[in-house]
Image (cartoon, rainbow, N blue to C red; front, side, top):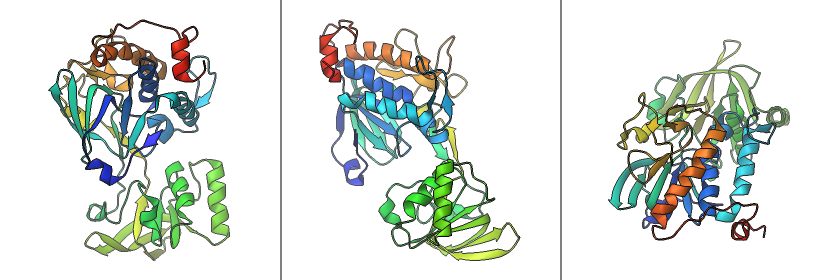
Length: 353
């Protein structure tokens, strides 16, 4: 896969592709496979910093039992398998972004612009955004808004930005522990703060964190933030009330609170769809196309009579979507339905012939 995250890319010429997929969760990933079998190239946009969507972000180690022919798989395991499956098709991923606007500039042709200013031109758009875009939960810290984006960050985009800094990471889940372990070698000093000495993260991560504390390489405090000090958006100190009630002041260059994510429909709500219950995109059941020709919606974000919010349903929707998308990309090319088990041409695309 080819991630493209450099800011300079966002200011370049429009990126042209057959299909733009909004969302890199399981349904968006499987859409790459179905489109690729039919010779359609795809770019994917996701607000998260990795593929997998809700599966990888909210329950990477939670078992899933209803994937056909797979008795048990974790959210991360499913993501890894899908990423391996779509390797032959060379999809390009753009992480840490979301589509702000979409306009029709041809028939068919859309121009989509992200919140970072990156511009895409695609003949087909597939919305596979699950319940919407994931937004970080803002912690209850008075005055935190003044520091956001300057010294308070809810995601790590570039680790080097934290090199040599005094970091305070707050949280007790997988994200907090993962970034504690990853940023420990980068920071001049790192403190992990959680309201108690029990964690919701993977046991292996917790053990590695405790080993770093034992070795004196990082600090751990049980407590909560009660105040922030700084000027012009730059933190200087954070006040922490310990579990024993004592108040300590920590010199801090950057604060990274990981309090989980919430799903919001976000800019999708402004793309001209007649939404069902204010949050779901109605589609037909022939190809899961929206009221706007050339824009499809698959997975949990769509609605039709009898809809079931299951990953396997989204996979089915991706397959039918690809059949209709082919008509937009190759209007003069006859589509012959083939099976991967018997088609030599499909097997060549997959690299197994």
